[in-house]
Image 1 (tube, rainbow, N blue to C red):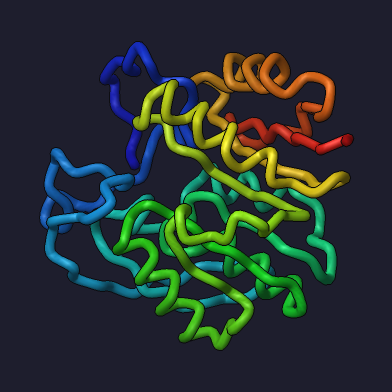
Image 2 (cartoon, rainbow, N blue to C red; image 1 turned 120 degrees about the vertical axis):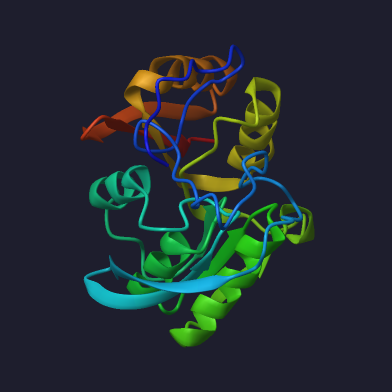
Length: 232
């Protein structure tokens, strides 16, 4: 969403976007509705946008009341510029998929991998399903977080996580999904530097000390990518 001068909430840990979050036009999403609302109430009015993912020019379906509905989010773009090529196979997780840019990129780069795209927002899940079908990406599995089988572990996690859920919920998300990395598995998180990258990285180092290595991978246009590797 466009950047504003509004103060960041006290419990905000980091932001996943341009200096902020991409919002739908007022005509598409109620001002009080967030992209992490499980059941958006705004009109489900779809539109098509042109994006470049995995070196391909694609037409994507999107709608209001999801994360970054009008364009490829700048934080997501930074993440994809920095992360290395995915392995050819394995289980990969797009944590907070929105309309699916990370899952689509993973699926295009690794057609033999199983891509899990999860979100709490039902509209985001429906759009990711539609975009996967449109692009004939049968290796993308779309679901709510609670519908991912407990025995599924991941080789790769990519995420452009939210800020507005607040510290407690944000930390709970990290505590739920980072331990589902296999030994040697890697998670990459993109964080806007001026909206809490340092505090987020510091928390990860403290929370996951010992069995995980937390490393500042790189930065791009005001965004930092933090790499978490499971050691044991």
